[in-house]
Amino acid sequence: MDLPLPTDSTRTTSAALFREALDHFPGGVNSPVRAFRAVGGTPFFVDSASGARLRTVDGAELIDYVGTWGPAILGHAHPAIIGAVQAAAGRGTSFGVSNPLEIELARRVKAWVPSIQKLRFCNSGTEACMSALRLARGFTGRDGVVKFDGCYHGHGDSLLVKAGSGPLTLGQPDSAGVPADLARHTRVLPFNDFEALEHAFSAWGSELACVILELVPANAGLYLPRPGFLERLRTLCTHHGVVLIADEVMTGFRLARGGAQEVLGLTPDLSCFGKIIGGGLPVGAFGGRGDIMDRLAPLGPVYQAGTLSGNPLAMAAGIAALDELARVDAYPRLEALGRLLEEGMGEAARSAGVAVQFRRIGSMFCAYFTDRPVWNLSDALTSDRSRFARFFHGMLERGVYLAPSQFEAGFLSTAHTEEDLRATVAAAAKVFRVL
Ligand code: HOZ
Image (cartoon, rainbow, N blue to C red; front, side, top):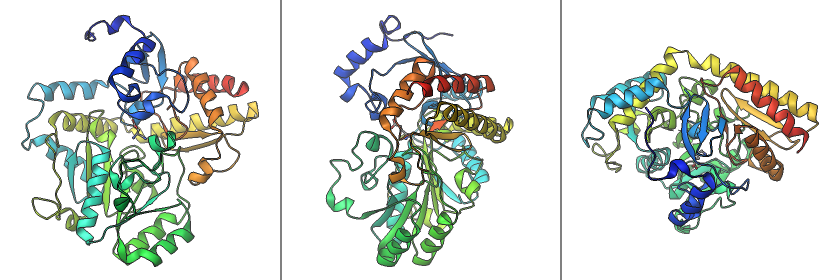
């Protein structure tokens, strides 16, 4: 059934909607990277989405590699998720009281991610990370935090320091409005730098509450940990009594059932989730060691709460998403699709003589326009961003939607087909030739 859009937006264009949006929202958007600032041009508005396709209000149909920034691992409007949400909505959209769906989803999360002994649901990845940070501080009685430059853990104050994603895209990796007194507790290290890691622990190990990281940094493009880096970090955290927090908001339930920690063989103390466990509805979760989680209110002194936490619609969507991922045995297929895309894009770039570093793990990827292998933020910054912007628009004109920033990852879904990938590679081959 087609639902009516409000007022006359069915007859309008993206350009007209964006003009009006500028009057309503700062920069015309409700989240900064949507404004296309890094690539230029006018952002489009979506009318509807299904499978691997977005349909814009202008009538264009796009192969979508943003996937609502990660949650749409089964494609858009998956019938299992829509059905689960409709059924849940019929019983009430929010209770503010515990409901059995919370238990159902918790059982699945714990079965899939063995490091999770206890967890708490919240409403976004940002909330999950900032709550995990407070918990680590409350548990250790220390204030210090280590993060890595280019990693993005949502927009909690302590974490908007040398942050990736939107802040990096807009050239504001340190946000105004974060008190210097707070930011000074956050130390930032280059990713994959063993020497900096050793130095940080010998200088501040006893002051640190936690180290938080994306095990696969995917908010400055995408790069992978060097062999041994995570193992060394784990050893140092254990030795110094520092809580190791894995931000798996993007990688959780995407790279494998057990996320990046399963693929990379790391056991964090706490993990943060979002995106896929909400099946496209707003959700977050953090969890891990029982002795740490039990420091949360109402058991312990660390406060954290939310009116909509454990929301029945989000829980139902998350359960449906995980069950469907298991039912279709999604991960081998996602890996096969990822490999096909990587091979195709590599070949297209080589034939056109364009220096591209295509980084990929499973169904996440990024194309950097540099001849330097990318292992950290300073490597990522060597990418030619004006070339990326031309690439982005060239692909969009040919019906392929990539994230509108060099510093975001692309996502595949089980709804993408080999034919979609061939069409994407064919488009890239043309665009590479005219960059
Ligand atoms: N957290 C998302 C991935 N980097 C970006 C979403 C947004 O900023 O709108």
